[in-house]
Image 1 (cartoon, rainbow, N blue to C red):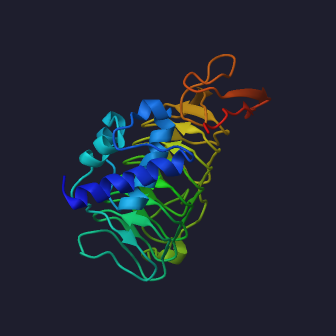
Image 2: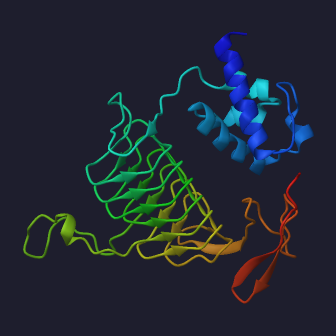
Image 3: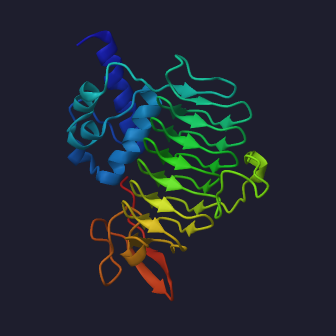
Length: 284
């Protein structure tokens, strides 16, 4: 194992210790012995990406058994790059942000992605290949936006996820020209921004209509066309989208008793709202 390989293993171990403080894992410690579930692995991926500057591929995250195994599955080089204020991505084939845009520390822009003038993007974000963040958008911290997703003027809260190919729209009456035939400019659009709550997920190829509010930790299924508000923890599918159930903070469905089918969390319902009743105790 080269010095670079050893350093990478140490960085991964540091990330593991960050999410499991008080433990002393070694390179060959089994992740199962540390009690890492799927949500913990996502948290670990964020910590590894921050520590190494390398993107953690999905298969590596799900298949790796130990810190050393995860380190061996990381790409030798990373085509994304941390973006700092007043710095356009270099080399030029990576994403960029326009003059007047604001991008937080640790945010990564992939190939051909763009943050438009006037958009504000938080820290530790991932902006996928070919994605676009329109003017007046406000994107929180630790948000992930997938390849070729388009976000126009939306307010996206922390830890939300917008999957590949999703469309988050803003103007309820879009036209190419004004009534007098003049081509529309930036000041001619009508703004009815979408709001996406903390931890919510917008599925791949979903469409969110202007003015809609997606509640915290809600889940919009892939391909759904959402024309009205979605409550916190609501699960909606179809075109037009209809609510068919509730989802946990971890993303899995709740059963009839509002218990998560994958983790220990339980919920209670008060009218049209669902709130957490029990939170699992973190591992020491």
